Amino acid sequence: MGIKDIKSPNKEIYKKIKSMFENNIKENYGVLVEAEEFNTEELINEYHSLIEKWENIKDKANYIKAPCLLMKSKDYISKLIDDHINGKESIELYFSKEKDKSLFQKYIDVKNFNVSIDIINTIDNCILDTMKRKHFLIGEANIVMDEVEAFTIIDVNSGNIDYHNAEIKSLMEFNKLAAQRIFRLLKLRNTGGIIFIDFVDVENKQKQELLNFIMELSKTIII
Image 1 (cartoon, rainbow, N blue to C red):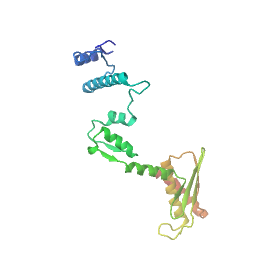
Image 2: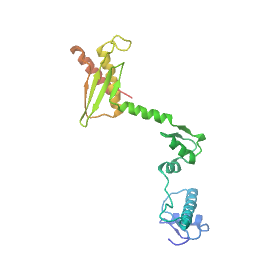
Image 3: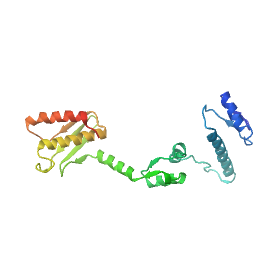
Image 4: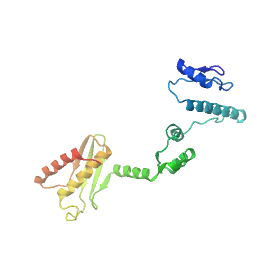
């Protein structure tokens, strides 16, 4: 492209660009626009910004000894701010690290933003809790989940649970409580494939009741 040249593959866009830049193109620079849709103000700002960056690179090249870094691309967070956040009137921002919050504060005015770090930490802790191997129910009673490539084995352990406390009156009630927790964990962990569950033994006449409870639970469980 030549000096002070204006080019575009679309004639209509070319006419529009020419009217914008014909008398404002800086010496030794041209304009090439390929996008069919663009914001006039943003295009002008980008034009001047690119020229400024190039001038800075040329200035550095005159006095910095090679090898050296003349320009560094924006990191992901800075680019994200420019592309999606700057110019927005309101937005909620969530950070997992304090340093990320500080980086955002360099580029934006956070006084009108809802900024939170604690909520991300809470989410991270919930994920870690969901994915652990052992999950306690009541006292020492627990569920142990072991996952391999082909299947998942879940062992329900009653421990020294008191079946006469306020929550659990029988082995059946304990198994039902364990089933509710298990299906919630399966949903959260997105567990698929073959699943074996070893419940606490109950009387033969109660096994069908437990099976029916599990079948209904599998249809209705929500997080």
